[in-house]
Length: 207
Ligand code: ADP
Image (cartoon, rainbow, N blue to C red; front, top):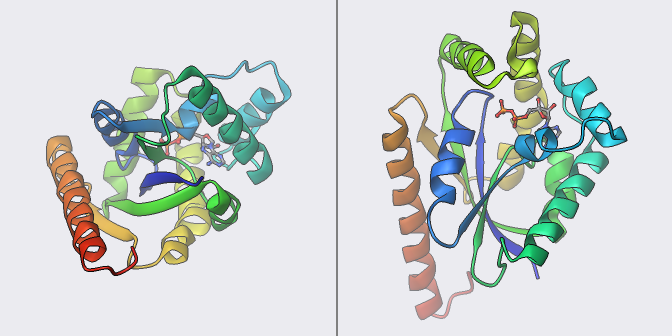
């Protein structure tokens, strides 16, 4: 069974984590942040060390390591009953982060929508990352050069994921609004996606 998923997508600092946390409080939505999965690990392990090495340089952790860790984490949540695939929608933030990961996850996920949190103002993103670094003690956002590298990695490696999923799945949301307005826009789109699917199902057209 492929799990139904909604993806939160956008540059570092675009508000994926904030939106994911809010959406995750809604019944039948299960929010998973890939960055949080990495940060929650024992940093003395091999994978923990890899995370430190790559994230502190503004780079992505290698794909196989990332997808393996994510699968292990998901299996654990299913065992604990914290994610119920028959009932819940996954709200994924931070994964897939490049086209290779999207391909690897094809067998795990049925992606129903990807919300692209669009923020054109680079200075705003940098400012948000710096404030978060101070607040949450995030080493990966601590210096200007790492922030610069993370934004570059996003442009080069992550953004092509938009093309991979295509126009039917990708929905743009203005991330420069207040957080509650971003949440409102996402939920409105979830509702209209659901409504059009129901309509198609009733008309006997495959989803
Ligand atoms: P942000 O919320 O700022 O986008 P995250 O907390 O999602 O950042 O990720 C922090 C770091 O963890 C990334 O810079 C990267 O090194 C690593 N990471 C998180 N998710 C992935 C992923 N899917 N693939 C590879 N590396 C990842």
